[in-house]
Structures are given as structure tokens and as C-alpha cells.
Amino acid sequence: MNKKTKTSFVCTSCGDVFPKWQGKCTSCGTWDSISEFREGPSNKSRDTAGTSAKPTLLSEITPLELERIATGFPDIDRVLGGGMVPGSMILVGGAPGIGKSTLMLQLAAGLANSGNGVLYISGEESAEQILLRADRLGFAGSPMQLLAETNAHGICAAIENLAPCAAVVDSIQTLFSDELESAPGSVAQVRECAAMLLRICKEKQITIFVIGHVTKEGTIAGPRVLEHMVDTVLYFDGDAIYQYRLLRAVKNRFGPSGEIAVLSMSDKGLAGVKNASEFFLSGGNPQVGTAVAGLLEGTRVLAVELQALVNPAHFGMPQRVASGMNQKKLALILAIMERYTGLSLGDHDVFFNIAGGLTVNEPAADLAAAAAILSSHRNIPLRKGLALIGETGLGGEVRPVGSMQARLRELAGLGFTECIVPKPAKGADWAGKDFGIRLIHCDHVRVLMDLLF
Image 1 (cartoon, one colour):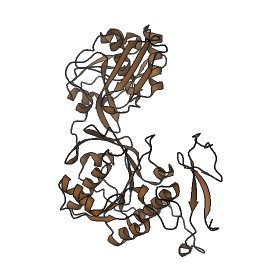
Image 2 (cartoon, one colour):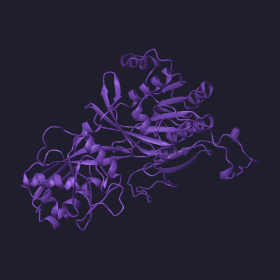
Image 3 (cartoon, one colour):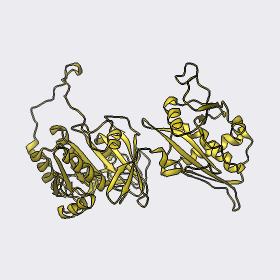
Image 4 (cartoon, one colour):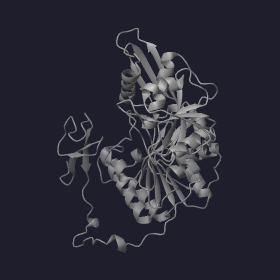
């Protein structure tokens, strides 16, 4: 081994570094996640001996006059916090075939057609293959620049020479640096190539979109430090066989995280869905075991259908299966209901699902989840036009949640006529106001059954 090459071991889950290999990461507790990391010899041309950085008072820093750039996708602009920020690096992850390359190609073509310089870099397809896909999507005549390259040094040189407004790299796992011995896609290569792109991004004020593959666990492949390096992390959710996709900002330094965009896939590419709530609602008369909640995703309110199936268990231990909600959260709601409503679920299987493939972590869904379980257990559908909003405490009390005005306005705009809500706290901004929807106050889960049926 070259004496100038330094070897260390990096956890691909949390990014912590160890001097030698071990089976379990002592920082995050993940097993078999530590990979060898070889750093190449230092570049003598970057010698900075005799120089020192001087700190500056925050009040003396001159702000940059940078305006956000519209991408041409209003939904994506909202997810990014109002548009692209010059000099930001954005990581886009998702399962194979979900539409990452299609979306980035559409976005690049839209920016180029608006007069912005765009460089699309592909390490997985040739320029001719990209042209075929662009022709199918209807923008083969776009003035964007194409580069089929995997050498990170050549890519950085091309970005510096062209100085575009934005660049797209598809994908980070195909890039490699000549200074490292490891193969493309390894921890060392991904880390080094991302650092090179980040340097160009910040020095030249160029927005760089980086597409990243995901592992079988659903996380972006490579060290977790990659997510810490970039400014924004966008995840594509949804099943490749269905029409709709969810683009979620799980990290955003220039806007709110948690924002989502609902996109529709067709043979002409991806397009935004104007009324996302209709995607999560089945419509028609309510079914047994379904309830609707007004949930907040970032700054966007969605009316989401929660589904429950409660059935007597016939094969030993009752099952608790949850899709779209944490299974421990479901177990907690079931325990609260058994304790305070007299419901006996110890000998029943409980299956729970969030319609549309959405993953819900917000406590405002607690009350609707309890209502869906009650409806399925009693085999009685809820009233048409009824929605629920509220968090359940361990004592069975129903607690208020934030942004009630926006939630109630969205539900009223969708045609809901009733909403079961917690009693407003003293001085709440939504207390005593008319939102065009009848409010039914519920302070404890023990009275929920009487309010539903």
C-alpha cells in the first residue's frame, strides 16, 4: 500500500470514523455498516503554509444580492422554499425507476428554455440516450448543455469553464477521482467527489443538483456525511408502478423541511397535482374503518384518509401491522383506547394504512386513527363530511395541535361539513371563529364513540 495513502474506517449510517474495522458502530449502534476509507496523497499544489483565515464580525459581512431562481415547477419551488438559491447543493434520492432522472431532465430543460445556462452531466447514459429521452418528453430542442462523463476532475473543470446557472449530476455514485484507488460508488469516492462539487458550488455560486441512489433500507447510498454536506435533501417516495409520486424535503437550509410536492407521472414526464388532497381521499360515501384527518406537511395542509381493519384473531398471537404510521405509535393508540373506552382488542388483529402511500408522523392524526379503529370494530361507517383533528395523550385527553386555522379552512374548502376537534386553549387564534365547518369539541377519547355514532 502506498505510504502516503491514509486508511480509516467510516460508518455508512452515521459517518463516524474509526481507526480499525469493527462489526458494530459504537456511535449509532448499527451492525455491519463500517467500510474501509482510503484517502489519497495530499495535493501539494494546495499547500497553504504560512496563510491563516481571519474571522469577520457578523455585523460587518456584506450580504449577497442573490434572488431565488424559479425552476418552472411551482410545486418544486415550494418544496425548495421559494425556488433555487444560487450556490446551493441539492441531493435528490429515490428508488430505481421512481423518476429522478426524468424530473431532473425536465427541470434542466425548463431552466434552459427560460434563458438560464444549464449543464446536465450523466455518468449512466450517453448523450445520444439522453436525447432519446428528451425527445420522448417533448423538449429535444432545449438549449441545455450535455456532458457524459464520470471523472470528477473533468466534470469540475467543465462546470468552471461553462459557469452555468445550474448543473445536474446523475449520479454521484458513478463519479470517481483519480487521486483515490477505490472503485466508483465506494465511501471514499462518494465523499471526495461530493466535496469537489461542493467547492465549485460555493465558489462559483452555481446551483448543483446531485442524484443519489438509495439502499434497500431506503436511505441514500454512501456515507451519511453526504447528507450533512449538502444544503437540501429531497426524497422521492411512491411506487414506480403507480401514477403519483411524492417529493419531500427532509432537509432544507433555505426553507422549511417537511414540505412535499405531489407529482403525476405520464409518458410526457412529471407534472404537479393542483389539489393534492384529492389524491389521498377515495371520494364517495365513507367506508367502514376509514376516517379523514387534516394534516400539516411542511406548510401545506392535506386531507388524508386513514384506514383500519380490526378482525378477530384466529391464529395465535394477534397481529399489529401498520403502513404509513409507526407501529409503536399504533400500539400506543390501541392501548389508550382499551384503557379508556372499554374496547377489547387483545384477541383481534389490527391492520392500519394511510391512503396514497403517505407516511404520517404528526400527532394530529391520533384522533382520526382512533376513530377509524372504532369504526372497523363496530362495523359502522362514519358520517359523510366528517373529519377529525387532535392528539391523544396517555391519560386519554385530546390535545390541541398547531395551525388549526389552516387545517379547518382546507377541510371546509374540500366540502367537509363537520370536524371533531379538541377544545381550544385559552387565547387560541381559532377559538370562536367561523370557518364554514361545524366544530364538535372532544376533550377525552372516552366520549369519542358517542360523537361518532
